[in-house]
Length: 336
Image 1 (cartoon, rainbow, N blue to C red):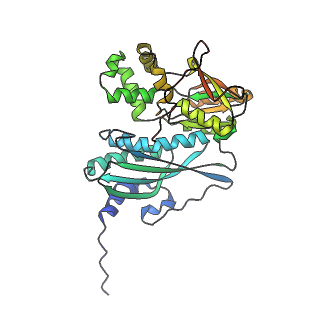
Image 2 (tube, helix red, strand yellow):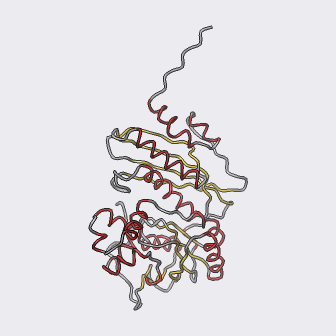
Image 3 (spheres, rainbow, N blue to C red):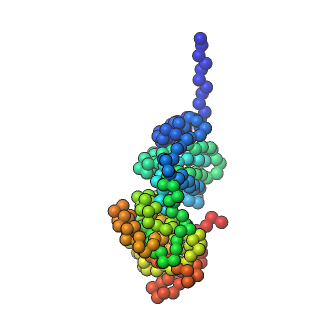
């Protein structure tokens, strides 16, 4: 009996098999040969889903390294999971590729994506690839898990809770300014190490997933800081029906950011509203602060108390050293 010859694979099939099938290590991904994947959460667990789209020329520079573009796309989603107290489980990828990007670019992209997928325990489950005449566009949807009913929402902050934030604020927005204008670093008198720090924080976020479990156990509310501390904290307070007072002098800044502000104090607005931090802002009952701080230290994540949740003041107030509220031209980054 003559066996029928196998049908030739399409270019898309070959692309998926070569670059992305090695990343699909979860059995539910079915080696990316099916139309869909399956995923069964652990018993007694909720599934947490989040998605972000990135567009060349908007969220990254078209000539950024392919591996860092891939890692940034995954990490901005992992940052959301960290703020919810969830553990990464897997992700879907949709990729719209310009014809100008060939095999070397795809190899680097898949290499960076695969490295982070392994490091964060978040395997590729499926997705889609298409060609586009427009800019490179990619969207990642990440799945996470946590015990049922324990997700840290934006809406849990209560009067008297303390406001804390991870890492340092403003580096991503200041790094973008340095990336846009090569003379900026010289104007701010940054040394090479400071310049590279700011550029690195813009290019590659550092999601705080190591702190996710501690946030789940101790935080009353949390969200990741993607559009600027001022605007994102305002969103959290609005969801919770509360207000906040923040002491600007207590907001953690890197050495590089402090150097930039020393040359141009007006940059504090860029640092607080510019976005691209991918840190976590959270509220915690006063009685739980020490436990959260201790677990953050053990996890190697810097955590700083910067203010308090109130109901007797309007909105979110950022107070300077004299106790005077700062007024911002624009509270946060917005696409619209």
